[in-house]
Image (cartoon, rainbow, N blue to C red; front, side, top):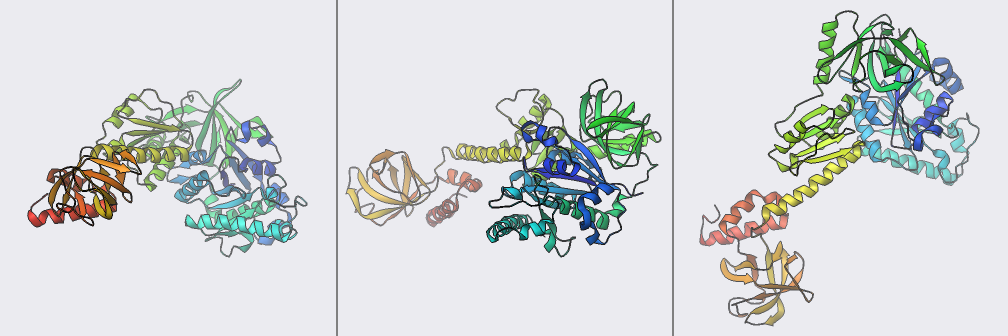
Length: 574
């Protein structure tokens, strides 16, 4: 039997994905959501007859014999929930709609959603939403062909639309994605379709449904085969408390059938939960209705004892037979994600298995090593593990949407956020700042490489002390630093004056006046001379190991100093 394809909507906050689904199902949930942001994960089945009614004659253009019974749309708070729609080896979503506000373009969460779609190899289309908010756009009859609506706009508005669309096409190309407006797509297996839409007026939404239905029917039919009589397989999306019922699990069943009275196994952090289904419920017209059984693909609410501590994102299997085998299979799938990967690296904690899996992938993309990744709150054990890291840059715990049970000492950094892109952004910022702090600490007390040229016609005092103007050709000049000329020690730079003010240091590109005690211009030094910092051999050996903290010019000067020194002593600094 062919089941409904599961279609998930993803988007940056407030780009309109829930409003698109509202239009499709003819409700107005978005208006009642706090701040216009989806607060609950919900699944809505749109039967084939309704799909045909929405699309009208558009479906006839595809010349397809439709066997899919409809589409199961899943709306979620963000792509973190999308990652919870997981099964072993991938994601249960068959296809996705990535909603992009055409006026805002691609945002950080959009890019993350794209990365996750690529990770799970989920086919998707793009709804370029809110075309009605473009300057000069005139909305016409609700179900009119969006391409005809575009042709009826002013030439300036059509130009704005094309510009905004191709800005999206360009940004997607940077991510390695070939995309095009849906009516210009030549190969649906190689190009991502972009459909201009307005959830407010309904423009483009029949075309969106047409493209989704056509892709599912033509390319996904083989993946939609399900054994109706087979034991159900599902994923837990959320644990909620229902008045008069108690704790319930919102789940998506993607294979087989689940019945009242079935024994089920749900994956756990340490061990699986085994329980028996007390009641099953599904939503009909936004009301909970009790059912005896339900077949894939569908959203179903399950009431069962002992599920209060179940973690979202966990797999669920019917296990009326082969209970021990199914328990082992489920836990094996969890252990693939809950990992100890490296002897050195950061600690990662997340609220769900799917979130953890997505974060591991995103962190590895930016070359962040992970020592341990697991589900649940940040504990004392996590803090001790982070503090024991040899590399200070690894003494950090990332917490996605989790509580912190213990306070960290100064030896471990804890970064928390309920938003993936903010978490990674904060980590990258901390790593940069910490690296700079460590650089400063490592180089403290060392004589760093710098190079000066005594400027012509800039001798302000010949001696007692000599005061001359110099150009800093590279590095940072600091006061009380020993200097050398052609390998000969000259003494120290006593004072530095920049634009009339005494300063302790000056960087490359600056021209400053310096005082040099016990030197006479015209005798030990003269205008046009090149001076270097006089680096002790011990400092040179340390600097060689810390070259990553020096810029290219400083590394070059360090080599010049070594060459000069080795003219007199071939083994200097070795």
